[in-house]
Length: 227
Ligand code: ADP
Ligand code: MG
Image (cartoon, rainbow, N blue to C red):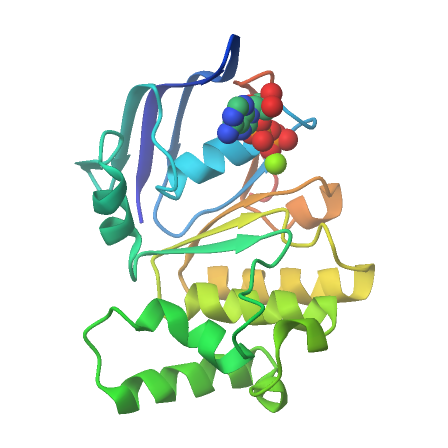
């Protein structure tokens, strides 16, 4: 998916407090790119990722996804747009505790027009691929952190989205599980997915094509990691 944002602004207003979380951010991400976003805590990384993932709207500027302006959509329109197109992976996994792993992974397919057989087939396929097929009937809390994150990635990719967004996906994992999760994301990138990942880890960021450094709501640097 091609991403283009221009002069993006995000101001949060809560009571008397106003926070400028993003200030005049412009960037282009080409279809198939793997981009890492880095920067100190509070610099706007999650805010930017949430806007890219249509979880939130900017308060100024423009956002184009595959050439279509999506920065001013209403909440229900954003939800509709995300379906089957954008997959999100969070640091805290965000699996639904009351649902088993299989049902969690099935969720993004519920509203897609696919046959029941096709849905089952896709869920089996991603569970096998993520190495969690044997945990299908387990509940999230019965899984290790690494397995939960693999389940969350399975849920993010089951609808075969063109864009995968990951907010510190290895932040709650030990180094072995973190490395496995990074290997999976790198593999998805090689298969053609566009990936934008927020990370604190310089090592994780080396998997990306380039690194965008944010500071205080602004892009201060873009580094080509690989040539
Ligand atoms: P990062 O992910 O880089 O740590 P965030 O994007 O979460 O930073 O936050 C950037 C700034 O915006 C911070 O000052 C944060 O307190 C503020 N912020 C983020 N989300 C909200 C919100 N929903 N309401 C008010 N302020 C927010
Ligand atoms: Mg954050």
